[in-house]
Image (cartoon, rainbow, N blue to C red; front, side, top):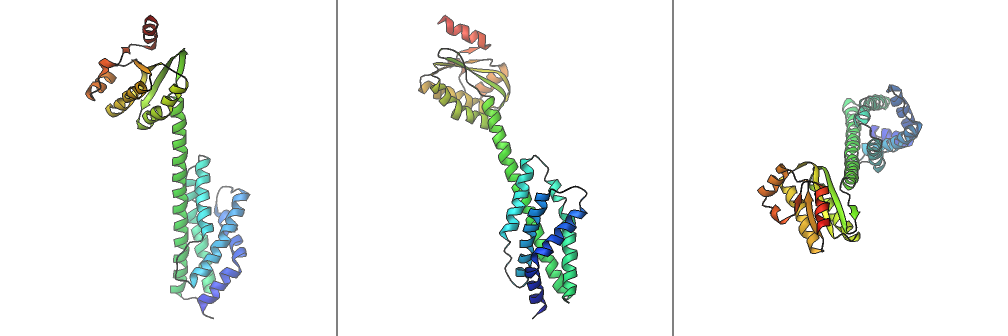
Length: 273
């Protein structure tokens, strides 16, 4: 049997004890405590890793074991879910890599592998660890992005409430900075809510707006046209001079929109009708 065939058989036959030994050695290198559940999961994953190395030694394909990829992704997602830093995981890899290389080198010598053959084994280990790092980081970034998007949507919904104040009258207080996502939310969520509440007149209050660009200003005022199609009258309050200037620059005709200094004046004007 050729040296590579022997070492391949060794990795596959003794995958579990090799995995246990490696994980225990790696954990000892850390200056922090690793949860027992994570250690057990790592041992199961490294067992697959050992078998994969055994198979890849005598194979020309570079297909990664699904177990290792899943484990790497789960690590990234778990870290994002608990609000941790990806660097806390990445910093473990140098110690893990060194333990792997030392172990593989020692096994190579035991099986009388030549220097070139040992280097080939180390390259395979490095490739697998590099892919594992990439999958962990990608999963962390992907899941963090989803969490951020969800949080932003929740905040947007809270900052664009329709507030009924009288029969058929409601206020839409616009607060903070208006970006495309918030403007889109108003169109998709607020407009149906207004119909549901049977609102006849909506006061769009701009007094709490911190920042809004010309394009978004046009988008917000376009909502008036949509509401008019469903029979809802719209008036504006709290439109500061800078916001008015942005609207004029964008070609929005504010003369067609009843505008008041504040919500109180807007309500009083409706009561006088």
